[in-house]
Length: 298
Length: 286
Ligand SMILES: [Zn+2]
Image (cartoon, rainbow over all chains, first blue to last red; front, side, top):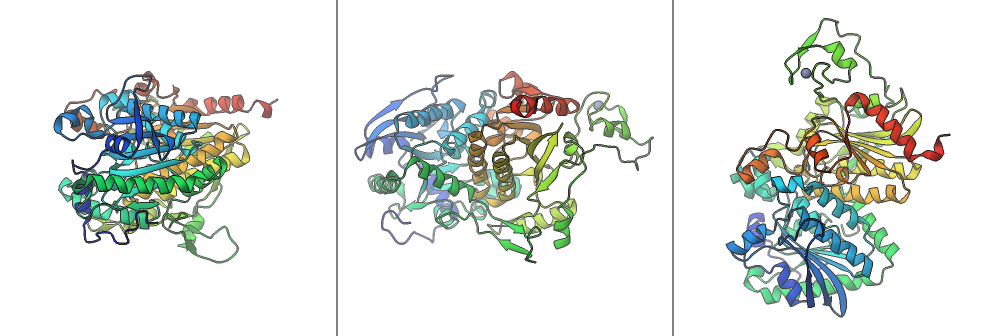
């Protein structure tokens, strides 16, 4: 699936080039999308339990004549804003604010649009005490059968469980130079290479780029960026995302809730790469290969 | 290799019994209290130190003591991991590492799953074995957990997961992260038939496992002293640049912060589980 009509991606970029682009401070952020390609964005605050987390924003807006619910990680543009927003790394109250909006979307029948842009969930003492693992786990479980269309777009960094906590979706899209990984390249390098400076090697080995994840069937579509990256032309990037969101919403609009949830179930249920030795079967087949992360788009 | 697969497909005796080969005078020094403990005594006590209550790690096979004797039937033992990314780090390929681990441990992957009974009440089970690459969650882990949840839903029985894990299987890249979502969608089937998921957290339990199905069970039990958390202690200490207190991220800490329902010593687990199974299945017991 190619949502913006561009047939070629800049394939000569290394994984590390894309990591740098994905983290570029001039890329459009969640609030830019909410304000520029939506109308009447109203930000909603707080998890009603502990506080309001500036690292994750939530709200409602009009998109293409329809009210949608929006959730997204929010990084800052400069050091001061990044400190305030904790570099887009939510605490549990951020994820619980998202959960509130998920349920809000279900209650009012609003499609849910999620913008993923985080190095990961915040790892500190407060987060552990307030149940970071539980907050992420609850979001994933709720999204698994939330009865409204869910579209998630990785606009920058998709950092592990902190990304997936707003990322279980009927359509998962990635901007061309965004990344999505199970662990940051630096963390993976320090664990598997015992050397954090091997981050570029880890980035390549883990297959974290949009074209690779699309090929693996985990990502449903790639949204192209301007030639030198989203940071060089925010307006064009915003426009590409608007077109992609409209197309994805139109695809999902006609589905009944039952069909939507059935597709979501089948999509996630099929992700995995394993063999099943045939010892239980009558035919003397040694083993058969299941496809890599096979889903309907693989 | 076929014979190897076959070896793992059998019905295990669930009786927890000391190995008759162990001489009565064989002893070890308990790593927690430094007291001398006779191995036979330790084995008879489900490897809980009789002097200080320290819970030694036990294998997935040993966990079957929870079940009625010979009631456990293994499923999906023939699922084998792939190396979907052709992942290589420090000149070791993931495929090679898998093969070595399988041969060394005589098991195909980190999860053992199946069905059995506790005091006659049926339940589906999935247990993680930390020995297999730190029970990291890859495709087979996710698939076995998802199938266990679906099997429980299909047969209308509760699901018990015994969880310990270092987190995601990084060598499978984003596929491993997506197992969190895969298991979660499967659990919606169990919820739809109103059967409980009981999650037992044992030492250590971190990362993608605690950040998905294990932390949203209907009932969450932990073993005394188990380390449980989202981020590893070392990662947090590096982030906040201070030492964390020893009680941080223990089962008792989780209980105090409202994250789990109870902390139950290993010797009392079977009794607790059978009581719970009866309560969730009132129509099945006269
Ligand atoms: Zn002891």
